[in-house]
Amino acid sequence: MALLSKKDANLIMDPLADNNPITVQVLGICSALAITAELKASIVMALSVVFVLAMGNVVISLMRNIIPSKIRIIVQLVVVAALVIIVDQVLKAFAYELSKTLSVFVGLIITNCIIMGRFEAFALANGPKRAFWDGIGNAAGYGLILIIVGFFRELLGSGTLMGFKVLGDPITKTGLYALGYENNGFMLLAPMALIVIGIIIWIQRSRNPALIEEN
Image (cartoon, rainbow, N blue to C red; front, side, top):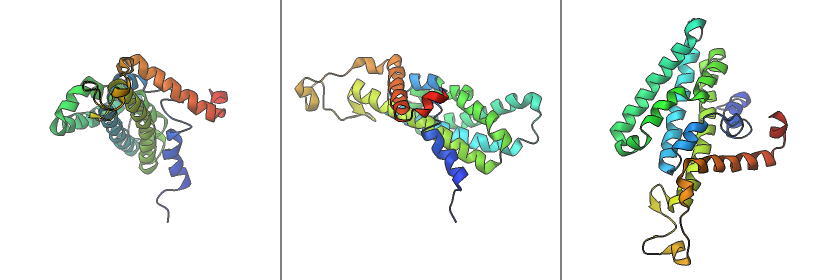
């Protein structure tokens, strides 16, 4: 028996491409601008959102029949805040320097419109299993874009990946720097994240014209 049905598989695969939260739904742009100057920070933020959205979707789904409609937003905020606190404490315990780099941005996961949107649009109307896969899919779609943007911004802006020099040493002029290559400092500025995302959107929609018609 297959682990996932076709419908469950679509919950994971659709947000990775044709229904991506960032490039199609244009959600979660703020963190994509703020923390993608380093690939490591992008990966950690992506994993954090995967945990928060997947677990949050399950909790909201389990509680969907007992949450009074008038306070459902408050309940959702309490759930996501509790999960974000867990993420923040784990980062402080095992990756303290990185937790200082992400600092306030981890807390802003609480107000990430992707998370609240999935709680409202999916978790409140579906069972825990489907809610879990929906959370995994949408968080993975969000994280994929963060990782792509972080990859190019760190590589072209600093000449490094995950802190390791991959293009050579700009001080001793080794590697590509010996050929006259210079880091593009503009890539480390937040507006360049928006430009990189714009390029990704352009590539995606040029390959799938149906996305242009839908939007």
